[in-house]
Length: 315
Image 1 (cartoon, rainbow, N blue to C red):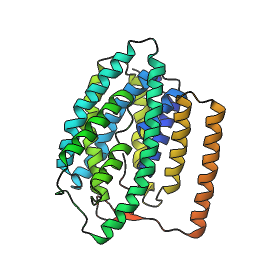
Image 2 (image 1 turned 180 degrees about the horizontal axis):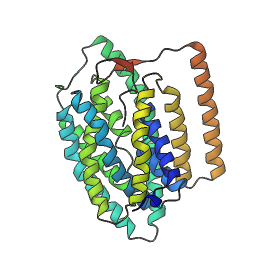
Image 3 (image 1 turned 30 degrees about the vertical axis):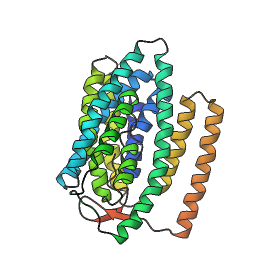
Image 4 (image 1 turned 45 degrees about the vertical axis):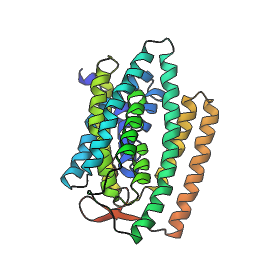
């Protein structure tokens, strides 16, 4: 690959996706894979495989921050990985089987569309569960890295998420965090995010190696994405110390919902109208929030300082 193979527009798309992840802690593959398919015309198979590889390179950057800060629950990482590694290998095998069919592109687009719907529902559930958990933390001691592991449910969560990531590259962030909030509502936010980032690393490495065996990876796409994503995540995380990203979370959910509908075959006009209507609603809510002077919600940060809840959620 030479420098002429790098797509500046794709790098810009990676930068925007990275900024969104850094600011809100959400998005990741849920934003990148559809962007590759719908905006840049990359085939669904290449988009999924290339995004898995790019994520496998990017995730360790965020994970190392939390490992150094000791905000990783290694028991949860072990049991999640025990499920997610075989799960991602199984998902990749299913992915490979579909590649041999005539309707491979349409099938993978449909998979990604439905997983995006699931991701949006998980994001909505995460907001509700997180608010409930914050009330519980106010009354009880906050759990740390010594919290007992519920092995069965944690293992099954790993298998399910690994399967989805192997098939679509989507799901390693929003689904894991939401389910862990349900299973471990007293877990500190920084440990929750650090554990999610760290458990994703071995799963994505296994998935990247498996996807590399099918020849669907575009090195130019991977490099172009990473050129934008890595600085985008870093800049977004820095910006999140001054902005809680709440309005952007809702905007991201609107965009993902409209994208999912488009991938599932809904007319562009209908999906576009939904996106525009949702954006207008989010804009009104944002203006009202700023007009009322709603304070930002603080949480613990790996470095020990108090920052908005999204500052450490680079997932």
